[in-house]
Image (cartoon, rainbow over all chains, first blue to last red; front, side):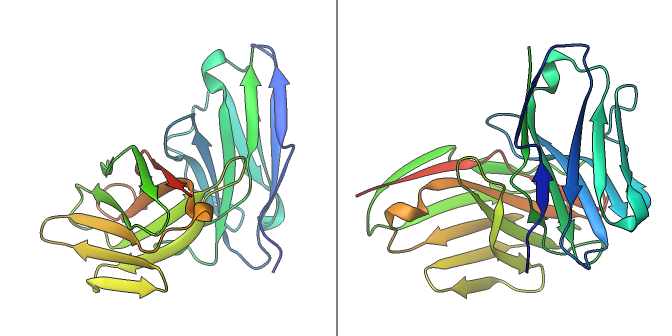
Length: 114
Length: 113
């Protein structure tokens, strides 16, 4: 089966600019997650979707981050305006069902904010 | 929320030796514990997982053990090979604290040929 697809792979922007990341999960996976991975740390959950509904966005900095999952398939994560501390790898993951189910990660987007 | 601690942060072993990585968790209701391998420039890849109703699970050279009483679980890699070199993350699925995965801080494993 095709894995989780993410684009772009790399992005360099200046602070206060905006950026968007795209994710296409594994076909048939109902649950989609966005994680932020800062260098040297484990992934931290930003938001999780079940089909096209938000399950948990309690850790998403909503003053600058937004995310949507169109038609319950693809998802986009946006940052506007970006701060220096947003420099990280943004990982998208999907799972077959919500809950204690294996996560399948994409290769991530490495964001550098200068 | 759940607190997952992982040790050691770096580990070097000779090819053919065993490697052990340990994690502890705080939420006693956590019920699923996956391990991920992350190679440079790639996303984490699931290598083995264990549920709370099982004490040990093995898949070829990789095994995971779980001690629910002590709230710790470990990854064991035997007969290590250079291609095992990567960063390994443990995770716990917490049900008391947000119904989400919490990850450890990672262990960078280097297998010396």
